[in-house]
Image (cartoon, rainbow, N blue to C red; front, side):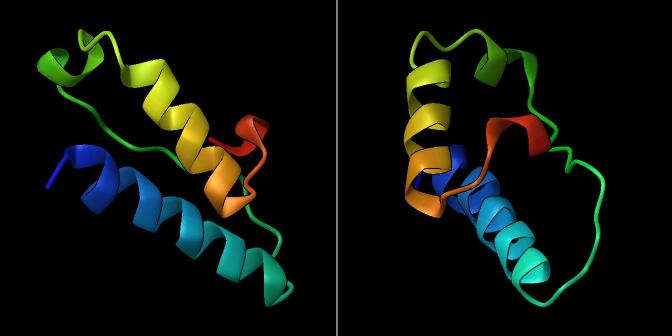
Length: 60
């Protein structure tokens, strides 16, 4: 399973659940390795996850 599926997507879903529960939260941070940052599909994958989770990019 890709890192985006087991790290980024669950983090975005959790953040959305906290917002729905009425919590006021700062941005979330997801650590990525140099290898992950160098992947040419990083932005596209991240965009799709943000769209699926309905999370605003400014919170990531």
